[in-house]
Image (cartoon, rainbow, N blue to C red):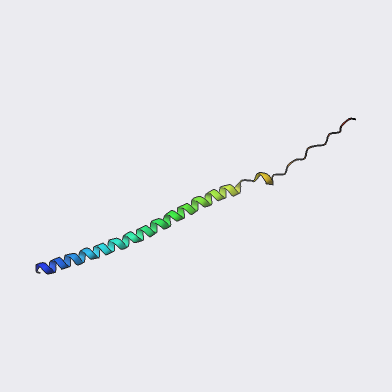
Length: 72
């Protein structure tokens, strides 16, 4: 193998490794974003479930004040 062929083969191999690295980086980035969104959805749903399980104050029936007989 002469120098030109060795240099071209090395550059082709470096380009192939670079493209594989870029593709893996893009896949990892997309997977990371997806995982963060899933975790955020779980956190928000947990907070909403905690809020919805509490009984609102307006739903509790209020007692009416008893009327007292006033002496005249």
